[in-house]
Length: 539
Image 1: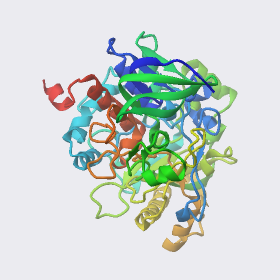
Image 2: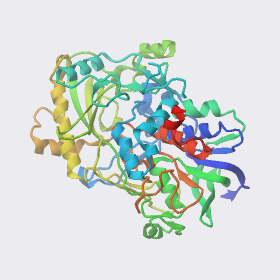
Image 3: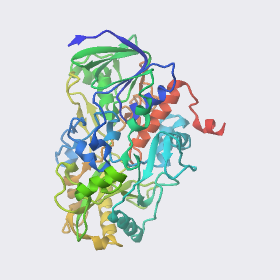
Image 4: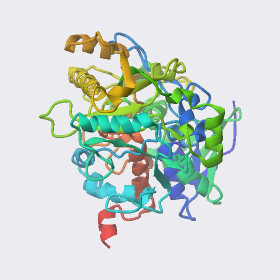
């Protein structure tokens, strides 16, 4: 490939996903700062992106990195599909739009692990409120006027109301706001939508900023290397239009590629575990052992029932359904599929919840590899506090090769036991209240599968990913930490990582909103604004 002349910016952001769009949008609010945002994928102006219920139609397409894990010993050697958004908005353009922050304890743990109280719940709550435009209005926990629109589902499925009532009948508390005083209980989710349309990080932060003269957005640009000179990141190389380009950064380079692409790019740039880099033929620039290690993800086990009567969301794509969506932005196509949820403990002695259930009025199986063949109902049991760990490693020094993803599912037996408990709890809910009149026979694991050992085997055979990889460039103070509490890469000046990979641990819930919150904090750090929003709010 031929090389293009250098171009110069103050900040170069790599990856226009949940974090990258938010960061570029916020940084470009300073008219003196020249910002370049690079994205390997293309436009998000795609109907399947905008229609909420069409989310699974974006998977395994040009809009998706279409990753697959290595064979997982804990899953009897199975490989799992990992969709990751390859377009403006990243995975916020192809996800289930659930607005979830996690537990307050998650952020207090981050503060302990990083040695910085700025990551505690009291300090990140103002950032969540700042970014939010909640249809319910402002209160202690929520904000209005921010870029990220958050709404209640406009046309929830009747089975969604039934499952909430059934969980209450089974003894679980009702929770109308998972982002309020606490997580525990059952209720309908709020979603990142605006009047029945997906509202991604690109919609919230990037598109309103695109006309700013100090912001440059380049799509179809695969970043291949961070340039490091005398221990400082000075820019990046990227491929676009059949040419190799160089973009110089006078202040800093920020990686926002996510938990797969950010560690991959660091290692391609010679920053990572030295022995591994030499094995794949990459010259070592800086030995940083933790890069790509400590990978965590939320595992999911689907429990599926046939239904006695009624239509599931598998029949949402009808002329009537499209007429409702194009007309009033209502109807079944506004569904995010996982319309309601539950947080609980797998064991009574636990101090915090460790299980989440997503309730879907549709058959969700094999990660939507095939369209649902029958009307069915799914309780997706998710472990939100995981003990297992995996890794991201290079297969080759060629940037076009996908990295090797070892998710490490069920390598810690505690995770398996907790998921079995979750399956048992899902069955209890299905047999209570109004849902019992809706559901027929259990399709998976199946009515004949009983006992802990049989359920353990079923979990291994049916476990899938909830697509929440984090921690592969985690914050911390130990030798395996990749970035410090200000998200700066240890040992390299002018280089920051801002995305889900920096999370020290998984939050108890969906990761999209926390990822955007990290970008909000990073924008304060880079722009030199108050990095203590608690004091700022008090002032």
